[in-house]
Image (cartoon, rainbow, N blue to C red):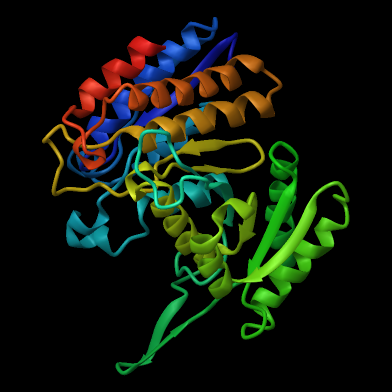
Length: 355
């Protein structure tokens, strides 16, 4: 904070972003100010609107300005709809992750009472390594990690380092201490012996420094099956990038809907709230988008910030935000994806009134 003021940058994004992000901002502002936290919310150019106004989806002036903020609230981007020269460039989210070293992607999955869930007893946190793996935008210093030596052959480079694997494992074990004290390491070392084998071994080496935390391991295919069969057995799941992406979507669907899936991307000093779902251009502008994922993402960012800076007020504000969402859903208020008839704005108004 600067002189007691929490500075939060807001990047509305594309599609439903300008509908769900303001709902989360207004509710978070209510939760924070009620706890005596002065907040400055600044909107910065981002997404298709920034292409029109500044010539790039994430202008350099936005990146420079973000250095001065405590938190970032980022809406979805719809890169597929950008003009050609911008579609082939790194996605805005990738640029933000690299610029600010957001190596950890934390994706909780917890059923909300009142929402039909395939696994109503699920309550887990997937800790996904966010800087390496098979994704082509994170594994090369220059160029893409995917390439074609001939028109009929495509290759991909996967990157796993001990340093990044130990770093994400440390985050997972620290978070397990705040939950139920159980970490599951997910890999595919029976086939990808060198890469995910290194990830597994690095995580198990870190586990020795946390004797108070129970640790086990699963192959990723078995883990997918076990999430469906007995999801309540898992607490914190740590895994590499691609596996974490897939398993977190599965866990979100088991908890009710991918539309409820929240996440934060963080380093040791910075945090970005961004829901898992995309821009959903097919429903943009209709006022029917579910803001819960964005609300929960902002709540997680506030809780992360409060814990990192030893300030109970943002942590309590984040918890209050989650509780207000739960009470809103329990009262029968919901957007059409939950079987309700409320608009995005109406759901947000109810959350604010509860706060």
